[in-house]
Every structure is written in structure tokens, then in C-alpha cells.
Picture 1: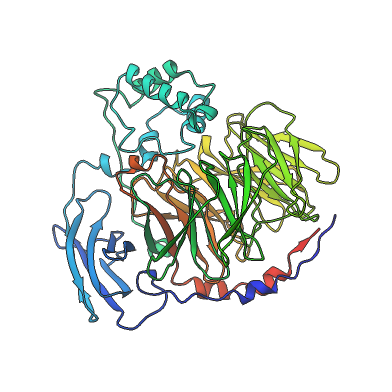
Picture 2: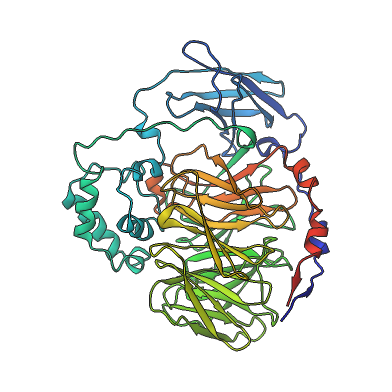
Length: 561
């Protein structure tokens, strides 16, 4: 099953979408600039301050960070009405509710005053850090951070042990996801533990604000696109390689939403099955968008050109079709027989789907612990999967169906989404211990790298097929991390919004930009009336990526079975 060379030159033909205004990559007619200086109460420059300009009419925002001299500059903005905000942990934010930009450059400076109480400004991970480390905490994080942050404003308390017990019981009783993932949770024990360890009445927390961003992390431009209403349940998102459009799914409303990065123009497509729970999405090399329907026990294929859906059934009822493989260039990956592989969250199995015949075949995990979650295919064609709520990864030989499983070194690891790099190394977040774990398939060896923030609830990992970097979501820390395997160093990119519970990372290979969606469920827990699709743009990325092989050259070195 050795791979033969894959002709992927079409990746090089992916057009660079000309983005403008709030996207911050290309100027347009009448584009303008907003700049200024941020200082403290003593008129000293403040670095690392997020300055955000929100276009009220288009419902999209751009955020930059002030530099060492307190300066900031947001370029290529559309003229119009804006809401401005400047904030940094440790200071009271300053905002302007009604600021009008014309086609001429404008200036607005901000002065921030220190605040003695930063508790409300801290991300969930800082609050979780008060809980005593150990296996019980790791299991708690595994069980209770799968859908939303724990330690955000809605879950900090203080609550009594009985009140926390009632909260836990409501999650366990939820017929949707919580009940399926938390069956082994002792609600009373959990309630007592939370109340006794920082989340009970009368308990105090001490926080230290993070240091200002520096280097590449200080130069990032972050764009946010409002999506949906108060009940939106955005889950995964993907960038369409052919057009650069961003797509996000609404889990509860059975919707696909296409977003233009140019002006946040959106087009909505309704999934043909009600209450289907569209979950993982991704594009194949023919431009088709695939999605798993977790509550509908099926898989869907959508043609953006025609707007037509095709539904693939044949999965067992209650299996909860969850994820399919994404290769290192961001495409849905099929095996050498053209089959799509899907994890079944509640079926304790991985299934293959032949799109030509519609035939579904299940491969059951030999262990009864955990839930098959992330999935990927290695250079030899083996199908690898991770089991959530356990510390197990497994491999399926698609030729004979043989399954082997192995445990991660730490007995209370919790693995979610996985990715495989060009060297057949599996990368997966360890939610229980806030780490990025690497498994070298050829060497049968593990290595763990602690993330920069403790208790950050990492959810997904995604390899950049051009640079080899690994991107990791810090869903509880309001951050995204980039890991360089060569130097074994992390770069932390903070996000400007509290409760930035991120899901999958999607990379735009024409620009190197990184996208994700904010998917806290329920969305109302964020304090916002909508969700956000987020784009990280790196002004130096074009130069940096020019230093590595071109996308076409890199793609043509990829082999397949």
C-alpha cells in the first residue's frame, strides 16, 4: 500500500481571494486607515492592547495590538459607522460607541486606567487553575469541557455544593450531548469538589495578567464575522479552497452558512434532514463540501455550485457520525479505494462509506471505553482514530479490517481531533493535561509538550502542510497556539473576545491565514447575541511562506496509496 505520487498541482491554482477593508490584505477604492496611540493614566505608552473596530453595518470587526510605543494602525477599512474598543487585561477598557470613518485617514487615541479587579477579564483557564491537579481534575476537564468553557462568567459561581450538584445533574440528564459524554460522573462528588476548591461561596482568587504579546503574535490581525442570532450553534468551519469563502455549520438549526470575507455577505443553505446536527465539514478536491450529521446518523455531500445535497445513510441508529479525515493540505481524505472513513461517537466504531455504492461497513473498537472522535490516514493507508474520554488511539488496516489500539502514556489523557504530518507523526491535544501529544508511528514513541497556558482545554490540532507547523486550539484560554516541531516552541495568539471557545482550525493555503469558529454551546453563555467566525491574518506570512517550498512543490511531494 505504498503511496504513489499524487498530482496536486491544482493546489497552486487556488486563487488568492482579494480581500479588503476589515480583512486587511488588499486595498480597495475609498479604503481608509484608523490609527492612534494607547497610553496609561500617566501618559506612558501601553503595548499589547487590543484595539477593535467593528463595522456596525457589515457586522464584522478587525482587531490589532498596540506596539511597544503604544501605536496601532488598522488599514483598509470601509468608510462607515464603527464601534471602537481598546482593552488589555489589568485595565478598564475604553470604547467609542459611534465613530464615523470617511475615505480620509482618521486618528483615535485611547487612555486606559488600571483596575485592581481583573477577575472578570481572565479566561476560563485561569479560573480552572485554582482546582487541584491530578487524575480527578483531568477527568473533570475531559467530561465537562467538550461543548463549552468551564470557568467562564456563567460557570464561575460562587455556588454551594448542592447548587453545583444540580448543575452537574442537569448536564448528565441532557438528552443531547452531555448525557452521552458524562454517564460516569458522580454529580454529588463533583459538586462538593468544586465548592471546596475555589468555586464555592466566600472563596477568593488571585490572578496575574498575562504578559503583552511580542514578536509575530503582536503583529497578528484578527477579523471577526458575526453569524446568526442568539440561538445559533455554530460548530465546525472550513475555508473553500476554490474561492476563499468561509463556511460554518449551525448544529441545531441544520444550516450551512457561506461567508464572504470581503463584506460578511452571507448565504444560508438548509440541510435536507431536520434535527440532523450537522457537525464536521470539509471540502474535497472536486470542490464538494462534506458533512457529518451527528444526530441524523448519516453523511451529507453538498455541491456549492448547484446548491444540491446528497445524503448517505446506512449508519446504525444512534451511532452519531462524528468526524472524517482531513489531509495536511486541508482536503477531505479518502482511502485508496475511494472510501470515506467516519468515527461513530456513540457507536464505539469507525465506519467506511463508499460514495459510489453507498455501502457502509463498521469496524468496532475492541475496547469498551471512550468514544471514537478524531480520525486521520497515514502514509501507509492505515486509518487512525482517537477515543474521547479515554487515553486510547487505534489503527485500522483497511485491507483486512485488523484493529490495533494503544494507550497514551498518561492514564487520564483525553484526546479529541487528531492530525498527521508528512513524517507520519500523529498530533493530538490532551484536554485533561493541557498538552500537545505527538505519537511517532514508525518509532512507536510518544512525546508530550505542555501548552503555554495550563488548563486551556485544547480541542483540535491541524498541521500546516506547507510549513509543518501544528496549530492547536486553546478553547478554554481564548487563544490559539502554533507549535514548531523543529524548535519545539509555541507561539501564543490571544483572541480579543472572552469565551472564545474555538473548534477546528482551517488554513487558507493561498494566504497562510488561519480560521476557526467560536462554538460555545449554548451560545448564550458567552454573553453575545451571535457567534463569530474568526480569521487570523499574519502580515509577514507571505514572506515567511515564500521561504519554504511553493504550495505546488510541497503538494507534489505528497504520495498516496
